[in-house]
Image 1 (spheres, helix red, strand yellow):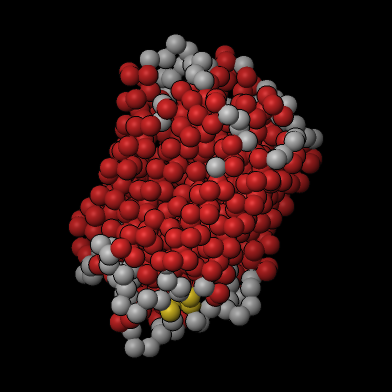
Image 2 (spheres, rainbow, N blue to C red; image 1 turned 90 degrees about the vertical axis):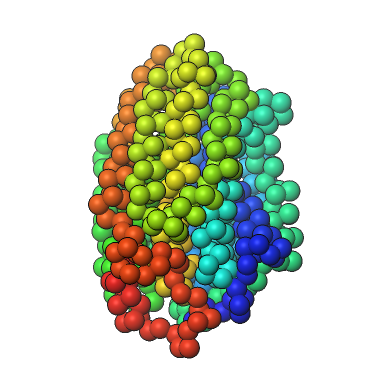
Length: 497
């Protein structure tokens, strides 16, 4: 049973809006660092004398820790209190950001980025679970939409903020900016956010599950990034270890009494489909942002600030329309928005393939970004609401953690695999002709991934109100229950979804 605000907050109340602000600021920091670093990568590489593989690790060290441990973060929040773990994560993230700013070589920066990812794993699932447990049922869709909108803005505004800081200050400031953001987040959360926890959470942590998940991602990521720099035997061994750990993860979780990832959640086709679509879409999103910002600087001749400003339309679109995506899904169901969104993103990515030397921003960059933005506005909030609606309230933290882990793993694997797959290595990020050819191939891969995401949604996602006969809203509020549901009841409900 989840303990939260008895009657639930209204989105229109002052406290409700402050909760959205606090959670959006916290998760926004994690999202911001997933994008703001991209615009600084070239300058970091030049200043620290880093190779392309080391630049990939600077991005992926963060994503690796985040994807590996985000399920643990969700479980910790469910057990000890979502607000408490969220606040610990914010503080941890701020400290790791300071260490990133102080790094003197690529190895130090990569290590600090891993620490940043741990902090992100603690705060990210808690932010969404706090909203799910704090708001009354009828306001959750709008609150999640606003949260998703602010999060999307953080992702989109990252290159702009990073570009300004790199061009007029130093790349180190892209990390130092997190310190005041963290301080404001802590103050608002302490004052306005209610505590919630799952009183039936496990008393023992799933060490085996967490270890296997981490080993799987580390092994596969290491093999993908170092495929062109290490002997074949070392790469093959790393890949084999990662794949075997991944294969062992599912049966281990199925046998555990209190698993880190409750496999019964995937008995819901809605939950499985939404996470499958998440993997494809966020793989494309992570790769596109990684390549586009480097392309604008390396090939198109943009400075860091101009490259960042190029993405401002995405920020504006997310600010104006992301929350409307959540409202639309509440009215008509999530299937159509979650189908059209990825296809619109695919169209935008296809238009961005043409970005090259002497690029015209208004005819070659802006149309693609606008189409991509429309897709994000359509899919982000419905995707999040669908994942949470398909899971029982008591599993809000772990459901959020699973979806976030899938998203980060998608970005992680795409950024790890694509550079070598499209023929880039060494210092190719500084060689315009070579990088341009790799960029075009990478963007076409993103188009395919996004289109597949739309196909998955159309074939597998259903509109609960239309197909099951219940409203397309998140799970029933705990305050309406007289007794907590057991595991059998959870599984029966999941199969119904």
